[in-house]
Image (cartoon, rainbow over the protein chains, first blue to last red):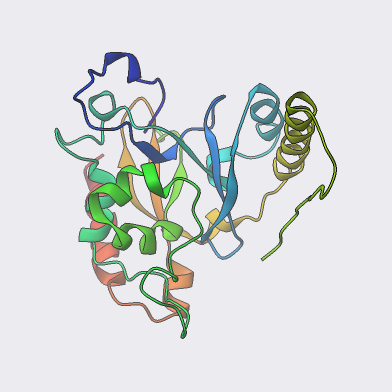
Length: 148
Length: 87
């Protein structure tokens, strides 16, 4: 869902560059979270940018996208999930009516959100606000090739 | 919430040394995190397939949702079947 930067294509009046919270594991990406044993994602702060060394090491095990979540630059029209004006992934997840991760009893409206390192630039947050944050821990990225 | 923090209070470091130590800590943390595999994806329900180039899947953990008696699972299952049939 994210790879090369399109920053060089931007003009001064363009919208700010957004982050894709479900990017591939590749050098330059940010380690956003770790998939827990129950399938939810726990978040890593402060943001850790991964390099060749991490990518090489993590690929020694099972597919890294099954075990971690990565963030990268949202490439908008360069991604199949771009609908022309927004990311279709979070829209589809929210439209599916999936209930969010329950908040703690004493949590305020924002206190219940995950401690995420990319919220200020996140594409999903920019589109859907806190609703996106509440279902984000339920989303895992799996790049398994479809059997042919 | 596990936290690993190093505070060097009262120690004057040059920007270069600070950056060097910071980079070393981040490399070490990433190196250890790279070994983690909690197997959480095995509890997932395929919701959506993405693209012939990326072969991405967006998955939702059905077991967790069931445990928490979350609504909307039937709708997710329907979507899942629709996506499966579309490929």
